[in-house]
Image (tube, rainbow, N blue to C red; front, side, top):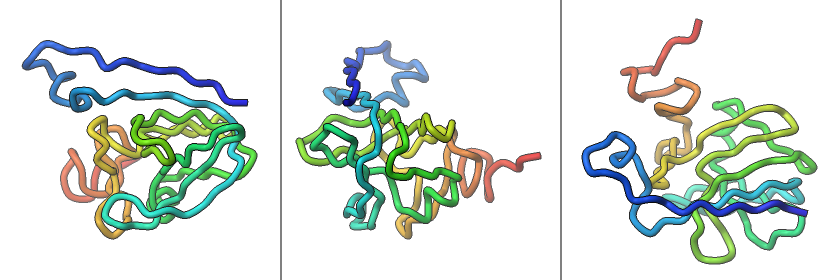
Length: 148
């Protein structure tokens, strides 16, 4: 059994930071939570092979990201894990996931920006970002932020 929620993207005031980072007009973000029924490989942005999950009771294939990038960012997803996915509602069949929370393993990771831009490079390597784990090139310059 899965739980679903739907968010409507609100129009925001021009010039605010939230507007600049917000999703394109007309994009609807959905949230779904459930148990991972299967893990597969699918083709996504740039033709890269990405890890795709199907949840119990859902026909949709949810596209996470390249296995190497997910591993580098510290995200593990296994069959039977309970996950909460925020994704862009697109054509039926498959949907790119913007953020994943693995409830079973207490790990959350942003995979794409609100504009659905992946946080990995064209080779499938994690590049992080302002909401990622601070690895790779990003807002903190070459090599990202140093963790202490």
